[in-house]
Length: 631
Image (cartoon, rainbow, N blue to C red; front, side, top):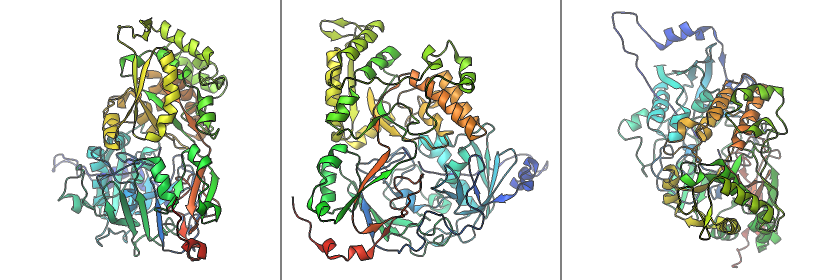
């Protein structure tokens, strides 16, 4: 599940006649004056690229500029929806923000897609980090400009970080919690101060947030949902759009940063367009009709049965299966433990036992997926086998507070017989419910207080209904009254933000270097924060403590050990019914594009559209001019 970025100002008051204070004097006291400037930064200080690098290795610096890239949304963050939009403010809780707005803003630094977490200067030319790693001084480039030609200053950067911490989306506020202040010493100098024991990724997160124009927001409220086009500074600016249907972003051809090492070979399309559909099947028909040109296919049924249309057969549309070596993360039904029926972990395990993944994968998904078991799926952060001594050392303080299974092999969801109704597992589920006080009375399962056991699955996409039907049937066998509630995207977002659901699907991926973001998904401190990503409402002291160990890790070995220990405790809590994942990207596109031969490991998706380009020679081939045949 991928993110975005931001900052702001604080003036320290005091007796004017006492000691004078300034950001520079504070930096001197912290030892930052003795620290060297760096062109980049990373969680553990390792950087692949030297200060004089010309471009990232994975880009095509000779890629031509031009053409249009059109697609449907495949990733989202904060208040965004895959299915619609009604606001051009994508960094607050209100409204449904338009996907792609991050392309219209520049940040202090940008990530390298072939390193786990390294960032290099964009608006910031360099950064100086104090020895205690609590003070970061960014020196801004004098050439950095907003789209109206006005200069990007440290005051804009400080304002942005501060306003995002105060009024940004709750996820942003949470991740900036350990940013104490952001101040402008002068137009070119931004000083950001962090709290002790802050997450190692908090400065990286702050450096990747968009920089807003302070002058623009002096006249407008930042936290309002609006269709006014904000003043940006990125490689694209908002072009044409129609609410809920499409939005286009136009390349800024004289963009101030186009020749910087971090930008060369990227942002090659003259226009990037996102189309919105309320139904996956209708969206697929739009692709076959060339209403948009690029599609990442997330539905195995469609990939296996419907990619036989004429444009596929005659080569006008290409299919590729590209490996995904990044952590696949978690996808599943998250059980809302704020609700009475899911308080008991035995009930939650019964929900896991009732889902027949093997039948669903074989019958509905053409055997295209593997079972997800961990939030660190497809990475070396997953726990396996009994805990070795270094993990036991972290787990021992919680003995007696966590299930005994934590000290053995980590929990794995059951493998069914593939019949659709594995009687052995359903009997086990029934016994778990009985042990939890959920008895059968008058043919219906009852909660310990006598109320009927009801479960509502909240959905925003009809494509998932087929996956729920066999699961609901099995829950019915257990006497549970289960149903699906399909709502529109706006209502879905509002209900999830308010935790007004029994069960909801969530998909997210952890960074290869997890840090403070772990709190937003799993910690007690956000369990009751409206709009947080802790959908299950997890409040577990052991999980909280292990998150802090993850954040405090001083090297990748310590990080790996702490993540594996966390994984054991999380899985033992039975907070979700794990679904499935694929370690590859299924993509299809009208054959007018090209991309680097080796997609970097950490590129979002497959680097599209940022690293791709329009191939005019392909576009001029006679077959591409062939009309699309009606189906």
